[in-house]
Image 1: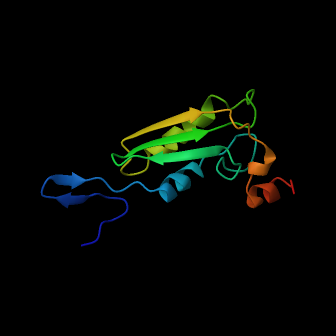
Image 2: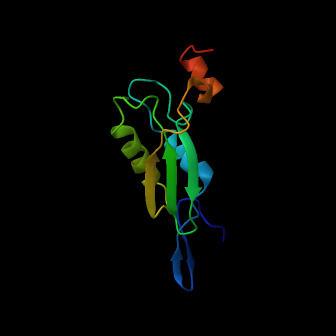
Length: 118
């Protein structure tokens, strides 16, 4: 019997949680959009690091386009909430970092095309 990606599997010790993958975390992060920009925060290049713990804990380092970003309070909490919805995630911490500073070179090609910045 194979393990379903959305449900844990049963073992003699009880149910084990599904494994959290980087791909799954990225998929969740891609549901978060800056309200002022029609591109998700992953494609904007705002995510600097994703760490996955064996115990289902996820830590993300992200930045914002500028320190005075109007969405400074909501984007990190929206990111955390999206990640917490992933089956198997037991805890999530999203840390905002400013080094290195974000610039347009961090954007994906798709994001540049969507914003006519090429």
